[in-house]
Each structure stands twice: as C-alpha cells, then as structure tokens.
Length: 137
Ligand SMILES: [Zn+2]
Image (tube, rainbow, N blue to C red; front, side):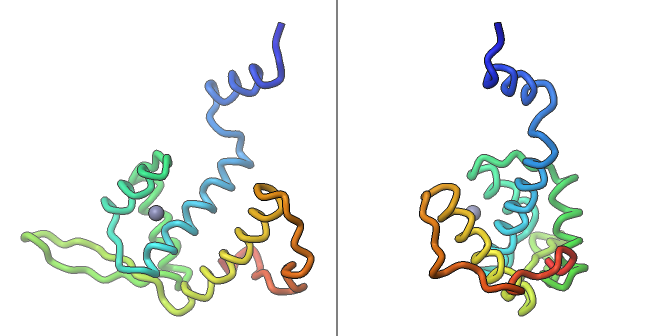
C-alpha cells in the first residue's frame, strides 16, 4: 500500500524536485544572489557556501550561468580583482538590480503572507501592473 506522501517521497528521491518546484527554487536562488550582491560584492565560492548554509546544494555549473545571466540582464555588474596572484570575479547589484530586488521583495512578501503566514493582505496587495514582465527580471 502506498500513501500519497510516500509516492511523492519516492518520486523526489528518484527524480529530484518536480520541474515546477525546481523553477521556484532557482527563482529563490536568483533573489538570494541579488540580495547579497546588493549588500556587498560577492564572488562564486562565497555564494556557493552561503547558499549551502541555507540548504541549497548548488554547483558552479548552475551558479556561474546564473551570475552571467543576471549580468547580461543588467542586474549585476562584474568587477575583476587580483587577489593572491589570481583574478577573482566579484558581482555587485546595479541600480536595475536594486529595483528588481525591490519587486522581488514585494512578490515574496505577498506569497509568504498568503501561503506561509496564512494572512491574506488585501490592504497591501500588489497593485495591477506592478509586476515586471517575465523577461524583465
Ligand atoms: Zn544568505
């Protein structure tokens, strides 16, 4: 006999997160990267360690393309510094990155209030048109 949760657990064990949750997870990681890059310039190794601290096992093969894409989208700026005889690439949020982070905060806050805290905040609901197009963030 198989319970739904046992089935889900077996599915996840065999296949990892379902594609829709993987997209959510990658979106969460993008917000996380942007959040830290807005506080101070970050580099790949530091970011992988920081994400691991939060329970995300992210490979460089996933992180670097994400950093490059955020840079191509104008949300991060790359700055190369020589440290200990080698070049280290730092990424910092641009003004567009700060604006995207503010939008992400509203989105996460609304989702959190509804889904996690169980508070439906009509008062602070997102005004129509306040979310960027899918390709803008
Ligand atoms: Zn963090």
